[in-house]
Length: 155
Image: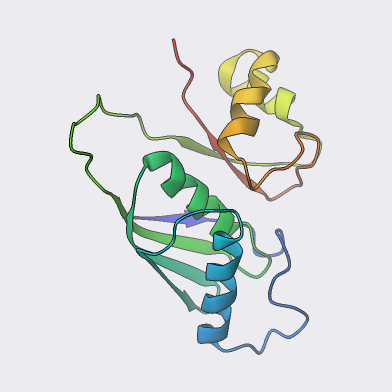
């Protein structure tokens, strides 16, 4: 379980102009936003407490867990995501997958610049792009404050 911080003023605008929406309405909007990217959220419960999204339940892979966290956090008006999602154990246990990093986009960043910073190789930007699909639809469309998943490089 963890608490991941996000920039409240950055992200997709799903709540509309009214900040007065009740937490239940916000939770339903966040859940629908996550689901629109094709994630199986049948075992994930979403709640909202002021500016914090709380995610509880189970998911199939660590990769999908991280993508759901950043999808929920990259919403305007959300400043944190409390992660209480557990990855279901497969029948055969594969070697452990290292936890992925998160990166908050700064003004002037682009994926190849981020790849150069985290991997030492700008050409590895495709790894970051692929790890953040379907939230990212174009490698050139990122914005300051957006939080991205940074996957480990395969050796």
